[in-house]
Amino acid sequence: MNQSDLEVFPSQPLDDYLIVDIREREEVEDEPLPFEKVFWMPMSAFDPASPTLAEAGKVLLVCHAGVRSAYLAEQLREQGDYRYHTLVGGLLGL
Image (cartoon, rainbow, N blue to C red):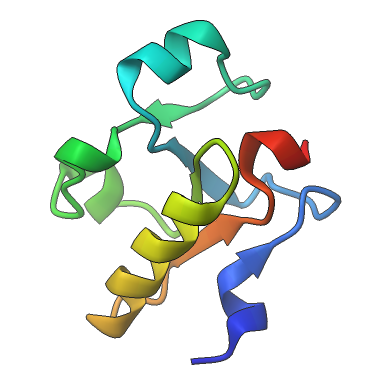
């Protein structure tokens, strides 16, 4: 797997992605992501078979610092689903 295919930088256009906030409820309540459309599914309850994710094209996973989202995107890609990407630096990188 090519790491550059996995990573999306905040300076890149994000319009083509379904942005998925995988942070837990308390994190989201404390500091929401600064995007108009965000789908929230915490990592603790993440289900790639959910209708919203199953129908999505490219999926951008976002967490606080980019560590959890990179881990999850990598796990999903290892299972053969290459639609998943991670936002480098997470919320802190914005």
